[in-house]
Image 1 (tube, rainbow, N blue to C red):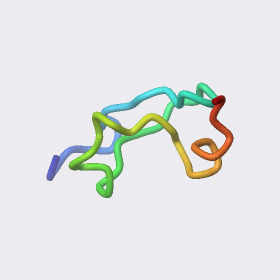
Image 2: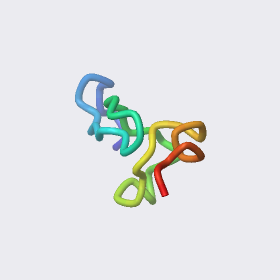
Image 3: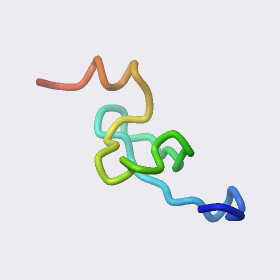
Amino acid sequence: MKGVKKQHLPQKLCATCGRPFTWRKKWEKVWDEVKYCSDACRTKRPK
């Protein structure tokens, strides 16, 4: 994703809060597995 402008990055909706969040470099290899926008949402997820 080198050289991609920020407005063109992929987005997803958080499974907990429903807010949109944008692709981050640290998620590059696991983007398909990312479901939550933050650690806080990941720990509050419904069980």
